[in-house]
Structure formats: C-alpha cells, structure tokens
Image (cartoon, rainbow, N blue to C red):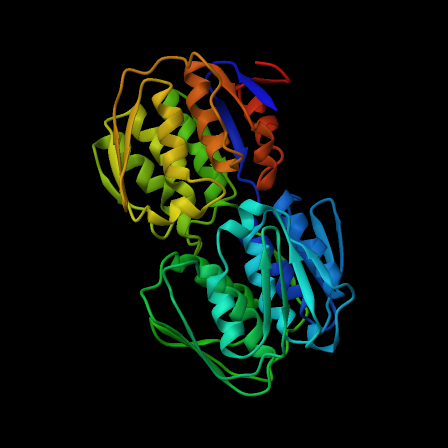
Length: 405
C-alpha cells in the first residue's frame, strides 16, 4: 500500500504506545504460570498477535480485549495443544518460544515468513545438534524435537539477545540448575534486563555472577500475577523526532527509570540537535532509522555498532541510506558504522520504499512530514504500531492511503 504524507507541523500531547518488547515477555511469563494472570496495556500489533497465537497453540488460554489480556497458563512439558506455531514475521516470537518447544519431546514446527527465517537460528541449531535433537529448517519454517535437560549452555552474545531470552524463559522449568555462559560480549543488553524484570514479576529467579554468565536454579514455577505493559521508548522516539521537523510534541506515559535500552532516544536526539555526535546503537538498534532521519536534518552524525542492522526486518542501514538519498541526503554505510551528512533536502520525485520494515516506514513518515511525498509498504507499521498513522493525524500530520502513486 502507498501512503501519501502531506507536509504538516505536528503539535500536541500524545501518550506513548505500549511496549511491544515488554508485552511479549509478560504474555509469555503469564502463559507459563499455572493459574490466571492479567496483563494490561497490551496493544494488538501483528507481532504481539503472533505471540498470542503461538501461546494458544502451546495450550495456554489468552483472551485479549480492550488492551487487557486474560491469560491462563500451561505446562509445555506436559504436551502441546497444536504442533504448528505461526510466528508470522516476529523474531521475538520465534526465538523466545523455540526452546519451550523442547520441553515435551514432541515434534513441533514453527512457521513464518522467509525474511524471518533468513535472519538466522544458528544458536538454536547448534544447541539442538550438539544434543542430538531434531532441527530441520527450510525457507519458512523450522521443525524441532527433543527433551531439553538442565546443564551448561554456551552462547554467543553478539548475535541476538533473543536467543538468551528464550533460554531464560525455559531453563527455570527444568529439573536441576543451569548456567548460560556468553562466549562473546553481550549486545542489546537492555533487552535482557527487560526479560529479567518480567521473570522477577512472575516469581522466577535468575542470578548474574558476572556480565558473561547467568545462573538459573531449576525446579522453579511461574506464579500468576497482574502486570502492566509500560510505555514504549522505541516507538516514542518517532514522536519525539517530530520536534526535529518543526513540531511541538510532548510524549507522556514513559518511565524515565525504564530498563528499555531505547530510553536513550531523548538524549541521542538532543545530541544530534546540538552537534555532530558519534552514537553507539549496539544496545538500541531499533533507533537507527529515526536517528538517521534526525541527523540528516541537522548537522549529521556517526552511528556505531550498526552491523546487526543488516539482519532486521530489512537491511536497515542500506534501506534508509537509499531512501534518504532520494531526498537529497547523503549516508555512507560501512561495516559497523554509518556516516550521515547534512544535505539540502527536497521532496522525492518518486515514492520512497518502506522495505516492508515498520521502523523504516515510520522514520520516513517523519521526514516526509517536512518534505511531503509517498511511501510504499506503509502497512508494515502494523508489525509494532497499528495506530501510528491515526496518532500522526491527531497531532497534525495527515496522510492519505492510496493504491496508486
């Protein structure tokens, strides 16, 4: 779908959307608790819906209405309801839930888009093959079978924190203690902090003897709770960046003491306004598209720790560089650094491509709120924030959906 963005100045106060990252974790923890839990503040993005669908396939009961999820938990080790888990495009869903599929000993298939599986599952593939488990992957699915036992697990910390999170959800349920040792430095550490916070809320203990290891006592049980999803710093960054195109927007509902890594967005955007900073995005890769937009509007910037942007919903660095160039900006994408130069910007002659990436679409919308223009793949925003364009309209940035450019 093509969406035309009409230039306009954003103005007003808007609440941050609920955190998709927190919602995944709280829903999974609730689904592992034997009893009924309530999770409030759940926004039904496509990724969150994928997690709910998969938890239901495992046997949990999840009823979502008006932002409140009523969850009755299940023991995945006792067997699953369905043997196909539809992960859609959600990397969090796939990587968080795959280890839970290794509790029952049943053969279970997790499905999704080809782009999702192109992002890689090497950590779990190695884990399964080392233990003699079935691990069979094709373009749009992976099938696993095995019965996970407690013990020592060695993982790379620089591929994705989602693999670590998946094990941290699963290992407390095993008989016997386990350790997870990182063989390379951890990236996206704040996402692990989010996981540990969710586990604590549901009564699970994980110890961190040092920054490279986790000790997980076995024979634990998740305890039903009533929890709330906090505001999302990741998506709030796009609202805050509207002030870089002449807007006057205040965002509410954000916890300043949140463990979300993307809470640095406010400081990073201010640094871009003040000069030409060097900003490390290794712990907050989802901010890269909007930081690139802000940098080209001001004095430029350098983003480091960008290598993993290649394995997101799109190759985010290259995608943003390509689209910003259509507007007169200049971006150089190198191995682990992106250099953004200020440019004389102009409306694009042709539609910008959203690259089927929700964060690219939202970043380009902010840019086009100044320049005007069109974006393809605009429906990709539904992956994390279905109401994005409605919220933009409420604060003065109008868009028109059209089938033709």
